[in-house]
Amino acid sequence: MAGSQYERWTRYNSRDTVNNPEQTTYHRKQYKKLRYFYLDGKLHKVIHVNRPKNIVTTFCYPEGDYRQYIWTYIKKNHQKAYGVVDVCNMVGRERRHFQKLMIKGDIKKPQKAYSLKNPDKFTYYFNEEDVMDIQDYFANVHWGRKRKDGLITPGPVPNRSELRAMMNDDILHYMRAPDGSFKPIWRELEDI
Picture 1: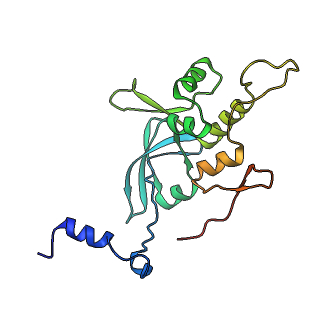
Picture 2: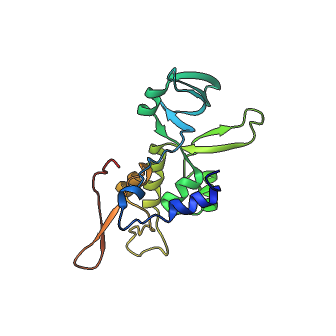
Picture 3: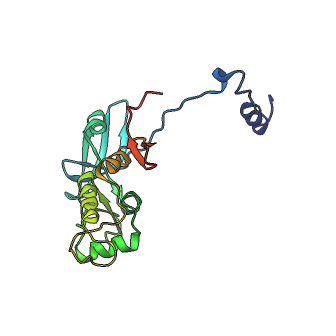
């Protein structure tokens, strides 16, 4: 046998990266598995993907039935679905506070994904428009004591372009301005 797996792993990780970068630089495309998505305003869950036939079987939650689509069409035209924790991390709020606002009705409840065996267990999934509405809500809510002039001082909330970059997994770059503040700049992503 050529050696144990640990020996092969240590040989691979101990290569000389300074003198020979071609051997050690491996670019791997990051792939996120598509599980929940929105199509035509309806929440779907991927049940099965048949790549050779280019067919995906999904469950449509609002209609409560199984559907088949062309896989390449879904990859091009789907809208991402974001869980409550993901949205809370994007807008910088705690989950409990966020859920209280949903119960109160300040934040619109999105479509929910439920278990077929037990429909009482469910999870909310937001689409991109819902996330933008949530950002708009938090941008118009006053933070702290009331002002005498009646103006709104919002809490720390990302602006729409930063939020869009978070949703699309883009990379945000900040540059220090002459006054010492950081300004966001964007650059086009290169294929790796």
